Image 1: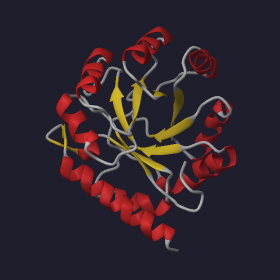
Image 2: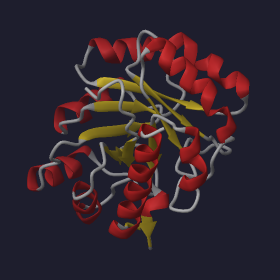
Image 3: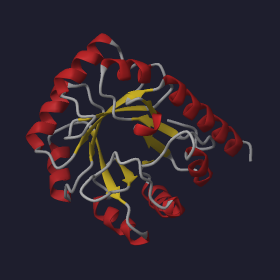
Length: 226
């Protein structure tokens, strides 16, 4: 556990869709690596990810599976197939579904909240006490994520307040890349979640991932010396 006196921004590199993506992400200092098991241009199967993890150990990184309105049976199958540490429910899953899933697995459960306006934070409250973390993303049309579009980061303090009051971690997702991260970090989110923003020609870019990490470390250093 991090010292309470040391601020460290958590980093998640998501949407790993090939062995090459996964290998590149493993080389980084990211805290979490994400795999999309829902229908998406970055969709992978549990069997694929299990093979990659067997070939290349994830080191000290936590593995996150992303699911969107999928059956409990499929999610549990993925958990049995891949050594996931976290199940990220990225759709319209309700509290009953989350509780049932939590009762039948021993992984952490994160819920994604799709930000619309300052009242969106109220949609998070019913899940508090059940979920182990949350992600704030932007929903565009019928797309639940992966759009590369951010929400109004000026509302991050609302989520940070809920996080601190309930001792629950959170990540900010949507539209984060090597340019926009400079605008995001001054809000000091607990964690950031990137996918398309760390890609070049639809493949994970070691250069972009390293640059993101360097900017995060510099921000954390400034924060801890204030």
